Image (tube, rainbow, N blue to C red; front, side, top):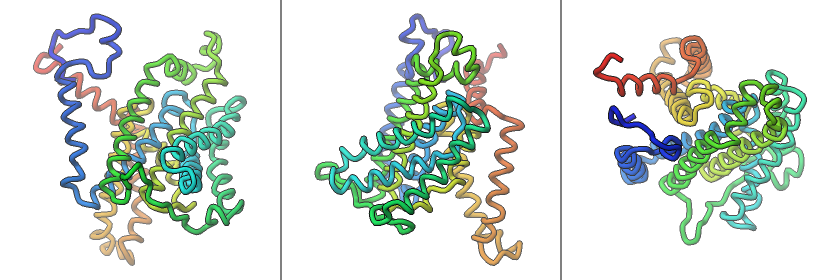
Length: 350
Protein backbone atom coordinates (compact mmCIF):
# COMPACT_ATOMS: atom_id res chain seq x y z
CA UNK A 1 0.00 0.00 0.00
CA UNK A 2 1.04 3.66 -0.47
CA UNK A 3 3.20 2.75 -3.49
CA UNK A 4 2.78 5.00 -6.56
CA UNK A 5 1.61 3.38 -9.78
CA UNK A 6 4.60 2.24 -11.80
CA UNK A 7 6.92 1.76 -8.81
CA UNK A 8 8.49 -1.69 -9.01
CA UNK A 9 11.19 -3.62 -7.18
CA UNK A 10 14.38 -4.00 -9.24
CA UNK A 11 16.43 -6.23 -6.92
CA UNK A 12 15.98 -8.83 -4.18
CA UNK A 13 16.87 -6.38 -1.41
CA UNK A 14 13.93 -4.17 -2.37
CA UNK A 15 11.64 -7.15 -2.84
CA UNK A 16 12.39 -8.53 0.64
CA UNK A 17 12.29 -5.18 2.43
CA UNK A 18 9.43 -4.79 4.91
CA UNK A 19 9.40 -0.99 4.56
CA UNK A 20 9.91 -0.16 0.88
CA UNK A 21 9.15 3.48 0.08
CA UNK A 22 9.88 6.86 1.72
CA UNK A 23 6.16 7.29 2.39
CA UNK A 24 6.09 3.97 4.25
CA UNK A 25 9.13 5.01 6.29
CA UNK A 26 7.41 8.25 7.27
CA UNK A 27 4.21 6.42 8.17
CA UNK A 28 6.10 3.87 10.25
CA UNK A 29 8.08 6.49 12.17
CA UNK A 30 4.98 8.61 12.70
CA UNK A 31 3.03 5.59 13.93
CA UNK A 32 5.74 4.61 16.42
CA UNK A 33 5.88 8.16 17.78
CA UNK A 34 2.09 8.24 18.11
CA UNK A 35 2.04 4.83 19.83
CA UNK A 36 4.61 5.80 22.45
CA UNK A 37 2.73 9.02 23.20
CA UNK A 38 -0.41 7.06 24.11
CA UNK A 39 0.30 6.94 27.90
CA UNK A 40 0.33 10.76 27.99
CA UNK A 41 -3.35 11.05 27.04
CA UNK A 42 -4.97 7.62 27.54
CA UNK A 43 -6.76 6.69 30.74
CA UNK A 44 -5.62 3.93 33.05
CA UNK A 45 -8.48 1.68 31.88
CA UNK A 46 -7.55 2.18 28.23
CA UNK A 47 -3.91 1.39 28.98
CA UNK A 48 -5.00 -1.72 30.84
CA UNK A 49 -6.90 -2.95 27.77
CA UNK A 50 -4.01 -2.12 25.42
CA UNK A 51 -1.57 -4.00 27.63
CA UNK A 52 -3.80 -7.09 27.53
CA UNK A 53 -4.01 -6.83 23.73
CA UNK A 54 -0.23 -6.58 23.26
CA UNK A 55 0.38 -9.51 25.63
CA UNK A 56 -2.14 -11.59 23.71
CA UNK A 57 -0.53 -10.58 20.39
CA UNK A 58 2.80 -12.00 21.56
CA UNK A 59 1.21 -15.31 22.53
CA UNK A 60 -0.83 -15.60 19.32
CA UNK A 61 2.26 -14.81 17.23
CA UNK A 62 3.72 -18.00 18.68
CA UNK A 63 0.58 -19.93 17.77
CA UNK A 64 0.83 -18.48 14.26
CA UNK A 65 4.38 -19.78 13.85
CA UNK A 66 3.40 -23.26 15.00
CA UNK A 67 -0.09 -23.54 13.51
CA UNK A 68 -0.28 -20.95 10.74
CA UNK A 69 3.20 -21.49 9.30
CA UNK A 70 4.00 -25.10 10.23
CA UNK A 71 0.50 -26.61 10.35
CA UNK A 72 0.85 -28.13 13.85
CA UNK A 73 -2.25 -27.56 15.97
CA UNK A 74 -1.81 -26.58 19.62
CA UNK A 75 -4.39 -26.23 22.39
CA UNK A 76 -1.97 -25.65 25.26
CA UNK A 77 -0.59 -22.17 24.65
CA UNK A 78 -1.81 -20.68 27.92
CA UNK A 79 -0.30 -23.62 29.81
CA UNK A 80 3.09 -22.66 28.39
CA UNK A 81 2.33 -19.07 29.38
CA UNK A 82 1.89 -20.38 32.93
CA UNK A 83 5.35 -21.98 32.76
CA UNK A 84 6.89 -18.66 31.75
CA UNK A 85 4.95 -16.69 34.35
CA UNK A 86 5.79 -18.99 37.26
CA UNK A 87 9.41 -19.47 36.19
CA UNK A 88 9.90 -15.71 36.00
CA UNK A 89 8.19 -15.11 39.33
CA UNK A 90 10.36 -17.65 41.12
CA UNK A 91 13.61 -16.36 39.57
CA UNK A 92 13.13 -12.60 39.56
CA UNK A 93 13.60 -12.30 43.32
CA UNK A 94 17.10 -13.75 43.13
CA UNK A 95 18.38 -13.09 39.58
CA UNK A 96 16.81 -9.76 38.70
CA UNK A 97 14.59 -8.79 35.80
CA UNK A 98 17.11 -8.79 32.93
CA UNK A 99 18.40 -12.29 33.67
CA UNK A 100 15.09 -13.85 34.70
CA UNK A 101 13.30 -13.00 31.44
CA UNK A 102 15.56 -14.96 29.04
CA UNK A 103 15.92 -17.86 31.50
CA UNK A 104 12.15 -18.14 31.94
CA UNK A 105 11.68 -18.05 28.17
CA UNK A 106 14.30 -20.79 27.77
CA UNK A 107 12.61 -22.95 30.41
CA UNK A 108 9.28 -22.53 28.62
CA UNK A 109 10.88 -23.44 25.29
CA UNK A 110 12.33 -26.64 26.76
CA UNK A 111 8.95 -27.61 28.22
CA UNK A 112 7.41 -26.99 24.79
CA UNK A 113 9.98 -29.33 23.25
CA UNK A 114 8.84 -32.12 25.56
CA UNK A 115 5.28 -31.91 24.28
CA UNK A 116 6.50 -31.29 20.73
CA UNK A 117 8.18 -34.71 20.60
CA UNK A 118 4.75 -36.22 19.99
CA UNK A 119 4.65 -34.45 16.58
CA UNK A 120 7.10 -37.10 15.30
CA UNK A 121 4.42 -39.79 15.33
CA UNK A 122 1.09 -37.98 15.20
CA UNK A 123 -0.42 -34.92 13.55
CA UNK A 124 -3.70 -33.12 13.03
CA UNK A 125 -6.49 -33.84 15.50
CA UNK A 126 -4.35 -36.31 17.46
CA UNK A 127 -1.60 -33.73 17.92
CA UNK A 128 -4.20 -31.29 19.19
CA UNK A 129 -5.19 -33.81 21.86
CA UNK A 130 -1.54 -34.33 22.78
CA UNK A 131 -0.98 -30.61 23.28
CA UNK A 132 -4.28 -30.47 25.14
CA UNK A 133 -2.61 -32.69 27.72
CA UNK A 134 -0.24 -29.84 28.53
CA UNK A 135 -3.25 -27.75 29.51
CA UNK A 136 -4.06 -30.27 32.25
CA UNK A 137 -0.62 -31.57 33.23
CA UNK A 138 1.16 -28.24 33.75
CA UNK A 139 -1.50 -26.64 36.04
CA UNK A 140 -1.67 -29.90 38.04
CA UNK A 141 2.10 -29.85 38.54
CA UNK A 142 1.99 -26.19 39.57
CA UNK A 143 -0.69 -26.84 42.17
CA UNK A 144 0.52 -30.16 43.60
CA UNK A 145 4.32 -30.18 43.25
CA UNK A 146 6.02 -27.85 45.72
CA UNK A 147 2.98 -25.67 46.49
CA UNK A 148 5.19 -23.93 49.05
CA UNK A 149 7.05 -22.36 46.10
CA UNK A 150 4.27 -21.93 43.55
CA UNK A 151 1.54 -20.98 46.00
CA UNK A 152 -0.67 -23.91 45.00
CA UNK A 153 -4.17 -22.65 44.20
CA UNK A 154 -3.45 -19.26 45.76
CA UNK A 155 -2.23 -16.23 43.87
CA UNK A 156 1.56 -15.88 43.84
CA UNK A 157 2.51 -12.18 44.14
CA UNK A 158 4.93 -10.77 41.57
CA UNK A 159 7.21 -7.90 42.61
CA UNK A 160 7.37 -4.90 40.30
CA UNK A 161 10.33 -5.55 37.98
CA UNK A 162 13.18 -3.07 37.97
CA UNK A 163 15.38 -2.10 35.03
CA UNK A 164 18.14 0.00 36.59
CA UNK A 165 16.34 2.85 38.33
CA UNK A 166 13.20 2.37 36.23
CA UNK A 167 10.43 0.44 38.00
CA UNK A 168 7.47 -0.98 36.07
CA UNK A 169 4.87 -0.18 38.72
CA UNK A 170 2.18 1.62 36.69
CA UNK A 171 0.07 0.76 33.66
CA UNK A 172 1.81 3.51 31.67
CA UNK A 173 5.27 2.08 32.32
CA UNK A 174 4.09 -1.47 31.64
CA UNK A 175 2.62 -0.16 28.36
CA UNK A 176 6.09 0.73 27.09
CA UNK A 177 7.41 -2.72 28.02
CA UNK A 178 4.53 -4.71 26.49
CA UNK A 179 4.23 -2.60 23.34
CA UNK A 180 7.97 -2.63 22.64
CA UNK A 181 8.21 -6.39 23.02
CA UNK A 182 5.05 -6.94 20.93
CA UNK A 183 6.53 -4.88 18.08
CA UNK A 184 9.87 -6.68 18.32
CA UNK A 185 8.12 -10.05 18.48
CA UNK A 186 6.10 -9.18 15.38
CA UNK A 187 9.23 -8.07 13.53
CA UNK A 188 11.00 -11.30 14.49
CA UNK A 189 8.03 -13.42 13.39
CA UNK A 190 7.89 -11.59 10.06
CA UNK A 191 11.58 -12.25 9.47
CA UNK A 192 11.15 -15.93 10.36
CA UNK A 193 8.44 -16.13 7.72
CA UNK A 194 10.81 -14.73 5.08
CA UNK A 195 13.79 -16.88 6.08
CA UNK A 196 14.87 -20.37 5.09
CA UNK A 197 13.38 -21.66 8.33
CA UNK A 198 10.05 -20.07 7.50
CA UNK A 199 10.02 -21.56 4.03
CA UNK A 200 10.72 -24.98 5.55
CA UNK A 201 7.86 -24.45 8.01
CA UNK A 202 5.44 -23.62 5.20
CA UNK A 203 6.62 -26.58 3.12
CA UNK A 204 5.85 -28.90 6.05
CA UNK A 205 2.47 -27.24 6.45
CA UNK A 206 1.53 -27.69 2.80
CA UNK A 207 2.77 -31.28 2.42
CA UNK A 208 5.15 -32.86 4.89
CA UNK A 209 5.89 -35.86 2.64
CA UNK A 210 6.86 -33.59 -0.25
CA UNK A 211 8.96 -31.49 2.12
CA UNK A 212 10.77 -34.61 3.34
CA UNK A 213 11.45 -35.71 -0.23
CA UNK A 214 13.11 -32.32 -0.85
CA UNK A 215 15.53 -32.92 2.01
CA UNK A 216 13.81 -30.97 4.78
CA UNK A 217 14.33 -32.55 8.20
CA UNK A 218 10.70 -32.60 9.24
CA UNK A 219 11.12 -33.64 12.87
CA UNK A 220 13.83 -31.07 13.55
CA UNK A 221 11.80 -28.23 12.08
CA UNK A 222 8.65 -29.31 13.90
CA UNK A 223 10.53 -29.27 17.20
CA UNK A 224 11.97 -25.86 16.31
CA UNK A 225 8.44 -24.58 15.65
CA UNK A 226 7.29 -25.88 19.05
CA UNK A 227 10.32 -24.30 20.70
CA UNK A 228 9.75 -20.88 19.12
CA UNK A 229 6.01 -21.05 19.88
CA UNK A 230 6.78 -21.84 23.52
CA UNK A 231 9.33 -19.03 23.67
CA UNK A 232 6.62 -16.59 22.62
CA UNK A 233 4.24 -18.11 25.17
CA UNK A 234 6.87 -17.75 27.89
CA UNK A 235 7.39 -14.08 27.06
CA UNK A 236 3.65 -13.48 27.07
CA UNK A 237 3.37 -15.24 30.43
CA UNK A 238 6.15 -13.09 31.88
CA UNK A 239 4.44 -9.90 30.72
CA UNK A 240 1.12 -11.20 32.03
CA UNK A 241 2.67 -11.75 35.47
CA UNK A 242 4.16 -8.24 35.42
CA UNK A 243 0.85 -6.77 34.25
CA UNK A 244 -1.28 -8.60 36.86
CA UNK A 245 1.34 -8.29 39.66
CA UNK A 246 0.35 -11.86 40.57
CA UNK A 247 -0.11 -15.27 38.96
CA UNK A 248 -2.57 -18.08 39.57
CA UNK A 249 -3.43 -21.24 37.65
CA UNK A 250 -6.93 -19.80 37.18
CA UNK A 251 -5.45 -17.18 34.85
CA UNK A 252 -4.34 -19.83 32.33
CA UNK A 253 -7.46 -21.79 31.41
CA UNK A 254 -8.21 -24.03 28.45
CA UNK A 255 -10.80 -21.62 27.06
CA UNK A 256 -8.15 -18.95 26.61
CA UNK A 257 -5.97 -21.39 24.65
CA UNK A 258 -8.89 -22.15 22.38
CA UNK A 259 -9.50 -18.47 21.81
CA UNK A 260 -5.87 -17.89 20.95
CA UNK A 261 -6.44 -20.30 18.09
CA UNK A 262 -9.74 -18.55 17.31
CA UNK A 263 -8.03 -15.16 17.14
CA UNK A 264 -5.59 -16.59 14.63
CA UNK A 265 -8.42 -17.95 12.48
CA UNK A 266 -10.29 -14.64 12.56
CA UNK A 267 -7.17 -12.62 11.79
CA UNK A 268 -5.82 -14.91 9.10
CA UNK A 269 -3.92 -18.18 9.45
CA UNK A 270 -0.25 -17.80 8.59
CA UNK A 271 -0.35 -13.99 8.50
CA UNK A 272 1.81 -11.99 10.92
CA UNK A 273 -0.26 -8.83 10.46
CA UNK A 274 -3.45 -10.85 10.72
CA UNK A 275 -2.53 -11.73 14.31
CA UNK A 276 -2.94 -8.08 15.29
CA UNK A 277 -6.24 -7.82 13.43
CA UNK A 278 -7.62 -11.00 15.02
CA UNK A 279 -6.58 -10.13 18.57
CA UNK A 280 -7.92 -6.57 18.37
CA UNK A 281 -11.18 -7.78 16.82
CA UNK A 282 -11.84 -10.51 19.41
CA UNK A 283 -10.77 -8.41 22.39
CA UNK A 284 -12.88 -5.53 21.10
CA UNK A 285 -15.84 -7.86 20.61
CA UNK A 286 -15.38 -9.10 24.17
CA UNK A 287 -15.53 -5.52 25.47
CA UNK A 288 -18.61 -4.82 23.35
CA UNK A 289 -20.42 -7.88 24.73
CA UNK A 290 -19.54 -6.83 28.28
CA UNK A 291 -20.79 -3.30 27.63
CA UNK A 292 -24.04 -4.44 26.02
CA UNK A 293 -24.61 -7.06 28.70
CA UNK A 294 -25.02 -4.37 31.34
CA UNK A 295 -28.05 -2.95 29.50
CA UNK A 296 -29.54 -5.99 27.75
CA UNK A 297 -29.15 -8.49 30.60
CA UNK A 298 -32.20 -7.35 32.62
CA UNK A 299 -34.40 -7.50 29.49
CA UNK A 300 -33.89 -11.27 29.28
CA UNK A 301 -34.63 -11.70 33.01
CA UNK A 302 -30.99 -12.37 33.78
CA UNK A 303 -30.14 -11.87 37.41
CA UNK A 304 -27.18 -9.74 36.41
CA UNK A 305 -25.10 -8.67 33.45
CA UNK A 306 -22.56 -11.34 34.42
CA UNK A 307 -25.20 -14.05 34.09
CA UNK A 308 -26.22 -12.67 30.71
CA UNK A 309 -22.61 -12.61 29.50
CA UNK A 310 -22.12 -16.17 30.73
CA UNK A 311 -24.81 -17.29 28.32
CA UNK A 312 -24.62 -14.88 25.39
CA UNK A 313 -20.84 -14.37 25.28
CA UNK A 314 -19.90 -17.87 24.04
CA UNK A 315 -22.80 -17.73 21.56
CA UNK A 316 -21.56 -14.46 20.04
CA UNK A 317 -17.97 -15.66 19.78
CA UNK A 318 -19.06 -19.02 18.35
CA UNK A 319 -21.25 -17.38 15.70
CA UNK A 320 -18.43 -15.02 14.72
CA UNK A 321 -16.00 -17.93 14.34
CA UNK A 322 -18.47 -19.90 12.22
CA UNK A 323 -19.18 -16.91 9.97
CA UNK A 324 -15.48 -16.35 9.35
CA UNK A 325 -14.91 -20.02 8.58
CA UNK A 326 -17.77 -20.03 6.08
CA UNK A 327 -17.50 -16.64 4.38
CA UNK A 328 -13.88 -15.56 4.94
CA UNK A 329 -11.71 -18.53 5.95
CA UNK A 330 -8.53 -16.52 5.30
CA UNK A 331 -9.58 -13.99 7.92
CA UNK A 332 -9.44 -10.24 8.24
CA UNK A 333 -6.02 -10.09 6.60
CA UNK A 334 -7.55 -11.28 3.34
CA UNK A 335 -10.07 -8.43 3.51
CA UNK A 336 -7.18 -6.03 4.08
CA UNK A 337 -5.34 -7.47 1.07
CA UNK A 338 -8.38 -6.97 -1.14
CA UNK A 339 -8.65 -3.38 0.03
CA UNK A 340 -4.98 -2.76 -0.81
CA UNK A 341 -5.46 -4.25 -4.28
CA UNK A 342 -8.48 -2.00 -4.83
CA UNK A 343 -6.60 1.07 -3.58
CA UNK A 344 -3.61 0.46 -5.83
CA UNK A 345 -5.79 0.16 -8.94
CA UNK A 346 -8.35 2.85 -8.17
CA UNK A 347 -9.70 4.74 -10.10
CA UNK A 348 -8.69 2.43 -12.98
CA UNK A 349 -10.62 -0.76 -13.66
CA UNK A 350 -7.66 -3.03 -14.48
